[in-house]
Each structure stands twice: as C-alpha cells, then as structure tokens.
Length: 388
Ligand SMILES: NC(=O)c1ccc[n+]([C@@H]2O[C@H](COP(=O)([O-])OP(=O)(O)OC[C@H]3O[C@@H](n4cnc5c(N)ncnc54)[C@H](O)[C@@H]3O)[C@@H](O)[C@H]2O)c1
Image (cartoon, rainbow, N blue to C red; front, side, top):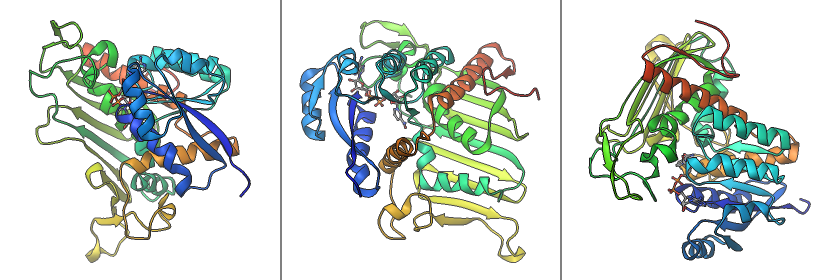
C-alpha cells in the first residue's frame, strides 16, 4: 500500500472518553487498512501536570492547557472533543472556523439550539464532522441494521429501549466538578435524557427511522445536593429518570426509559424490535450476541436464536481474531475511527454527522418539554415530518 497521509489529532479531555478515543486512534491501523495515519499530536486539559502524565502514557507529542491554543495550532488537522457537554459548542464552532475536522462526543449540544449553531459551523466551513454515537458500531447492532435494511423484519411495529444505571441513588453524592459534572444541569444540559436516552434515540433512529412525536415523564428524586465547586447545597436541575412514548415515521411505536436509580444496574442498555416477520433483541452486557426470532422457521423448531456475532462475515469481525472470539466496548470506538478514515478517503464522510446529532437533540428537547408540560410534543426541526 502507498504511504499513508498523516492526520494530526488534537484531543480535548483526558477522562473516560479521552482514553477510549486515544486508544482508537492508536489501534486503528493495526487492524484496519486505511489511507491515513493518525498522529496523537496534542492533548488539551486544564491541569498541565495531569495532561503531561496522560501525554506520556498515551503517546501524545505535546500538551495544551487552553483549547483555544489547540484550535489555533497550524499543525493540527482534527479536533476531537471529549470534554463535558458545556464545552462542545464553543470548541466545535471555533475548530470549524479554523478549518479543522471536528469529532464531538454526544450529546452534540446541551440543547438543539446549541447543536444547530454547531451544524451551521461545520457545514459552512465544509469540514468533516462526526458525533461519537459509538453503539452503532457494536458488530451485533450493525448486524441488526443490516437485517432490518434487508427487510428481514418486514413491517416494524415496536421499538423498545432502556438504559439503566444506579450510581446516583445516595443523597450524599455531590454535584458538579470533575467526574460529577453530569449532575450539574448548567454543564450537562439535562440528566439521563441527554446522557443515556440520547444513545438510545440515536440507535433507534438509525435502525428504525425518524421519531416525530413524544410523550414523556421525568423525575428528580434527590432535589438538593452539595455542589463541589461552590461548596453550597444547591437545587438539582437534572432529570434522574426519564421515560417516553414515541411515534416513528414508519408507523411503529417506541417505548424508552433511562434512569440512574435502577439498583443493581451499572450500564444496562437493551433494545428490542418487533416486526411482522421477525424480532431482534440486543443487550450491552452481552454485546457480542444478537437475539433473533424468525417466524419463517419451521414451526416446531421456532424459537429465539442467540447469534454469536464473531464470524468473518459479521460486520467488522474479519478485522479481528478468528471466528468464535469476541471483542468488546473499546472496539466500537476503533470501528468508528476506521469508518471515519475510510470516509475521508472516499469523500463520503462517515455518519453520524453533526446533523444527525442535532436530530437526536431535537428529540431530547421534545422529551424534556413534554415532561415539563405534560403534553404530547411534536419533534421540531428536520426530523419532524407527519402528524400522527
Ligand atoms: N460515547 C459514549 O458512550 C460516551 C460515554 C461517556 C461520556 N460521553 C461523553 O463524552 C464527554 C466527556 O465525558 P467523560 O465521561 O469522558 O467525562 P470525564 O469527566 O471522564 O472527562 C472529561 C475531561 O474533560 C476535561 N475538561 C473539562 N473541561 C475542560 C476544558 N474547558 N478544557 C479542556 N478539558 C476540559 C476534564 O479535565 C476531563 O479530562 C461528555 O460529553 C459525555 O457525554 C460519551
């Protein structure tokens, strides 16, 4: 293969996602044959000592403590935003204006209004852009997409998804600051709606098309928590739990739930789709399996099959080990980088683009509005299509 083109990466944030993304850029060409060679050029975080330690552990060439300096560097091609939600818009817009490619963690904005400005910035600057909705690239979920697109399920009646955690049940958990910014509404934008349901909504619209109407309820079980940055007890502004009914454009009905109050669950993301001819179910705890029920099977043998998605003809799997050996969570990010680099090569940029991230934000906005007002809400923006 001819020499690869260098792609200089400037990463913002060295937390949970900073690690998954750094790993993905480092691993991608060991397993996928792409035309680009990502170089971990600079890591940006506010604490220089910690950023330097991260740079030496992960192989970054340099450190920045202000994202503005990073964005203005002429030796950076791509800005990757792996910092909290309140930083996404400002960094992404500045990066696009500086002509950089922009990858951004989810949710794209804290609201659709914020995400609209981000879409405008990347589309006006015509820079490659992508949102890290990585669950699309779990091989079993990608296989579900393939089966649906082939028409195996026939008409779809139901889409059901939930994302359950239990880490904020104690009233002693503070809000705000490192690790706990998710509880501070000013930083996060919302609670589980933007954090967990956003994943469920992105996967759902990818597999089953647009959502145009929702009816939701949310609850904040613990109303006040000490704030790490101010030291005061402050009102909690996020939703601790969020559930909604949805109508999809294809006529199917959706049922979604996310909470951080489901004792015993750490990260249980499950989805199930029921069609006329077949059903599909998937569970993040068993992410390499796809459950599949085919009504066309011989009657006395009919039943749910558990497909071990590890064979060479399964999505992404020929790039890994040998059939029968499974891969895990971190690989979804490697797949996303591989697809991104292939998209640069072909000129057809890999999805989800910022515009799809915005579509999810329109749904989460409608969910929060419905929960507040108690009414069914039409999803605004390009995703909205028909009354139902
Ligand atoms: N795709 C997924 O599955 C997934 C999973 C977790 C988090 N996320 C998203 O990723 C983003 C980061 O979440 P996380 O869990 O990695 O958070 P984290 O708290 O583990 O890490 C955040 C990092 O951002 C840095 N940071 C904060 N403000 C900054 C600033 N102004 N300039 C530079 N760096 C700054 C912090 O120092 C830290 O290194 C969030 O938007 C979150 O919603 C996505």
